[in-house]
Amino acid sequence: MALTKEDLLAISEIMDMKLKTELQPLKNDMQVLKSDVEGLKSNVQVLQDNMQVLQDDMQGVKDKLHLMNLYHENVITPRLDTIESCYTGTYRRYQKDADKMEDAFDDIDLLKKVVTEHSEKLQKLA
Image (cartoon, rainbow, N blue to C red; front, side):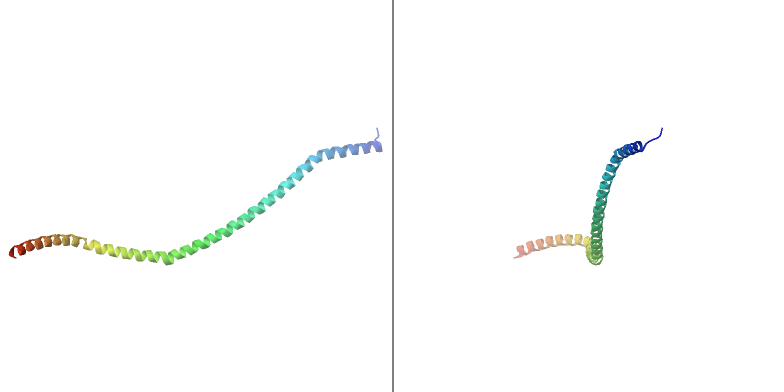
């Protein structure tokens, strides 16, 4: 059985239609994939832009932190050291003289009693 030219043309058309039918979903899927890839590219670009903004912000934070550390080192710490030395010096003086204060209060009480007695005696003499 020999195939005629018309038979071959018919077979060719059937194959073309079958291929078109089967390839069309693949073409559609490829279009969806292309669209998705474009969307992903766009999202990646947005993420890269956001990362750049974050990196710039982080650099600003690092710069400010560095300035704060310098200020702390050059201004705050020396002032705190000065305050501490004044406080500890005053504390040591007060601590050393605390026992003397008790004695001074006792002496003042004694002086009050003596002055009161002498005032009474002077009143009687007058």
